[in-house]
Image 1 (tube, rainbow, N blue to C red):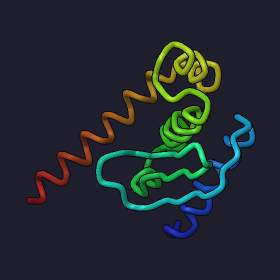
Image 2: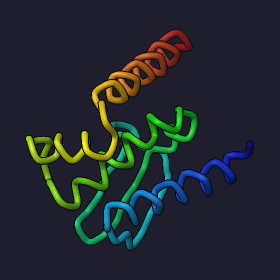
Image 3: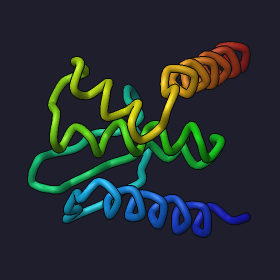
Length: 113
């Protein structure tokens, strides 16, 4: 599948979750990001790291939901955690998978130096 197609599918997934969570997205970008998986602004702007396109759908959903919930809850406190659990179940497992993927990317980058 082409990168362009991957982006299209990922964006569709973001909008599906936005509808479920009743989040209004003004602008959505998928782009290279050095230090984070996603960012958002309460004005409705959302950015996702383009490396997420290579991840499992469930792990990508974790990042999507994680970010979109910040429109309602700006931190990772009890309310945020309960919302994550309500939408994704045992989200901690997906968080762990994301961290493992991150470690693999870092190790691959280090071995290429």
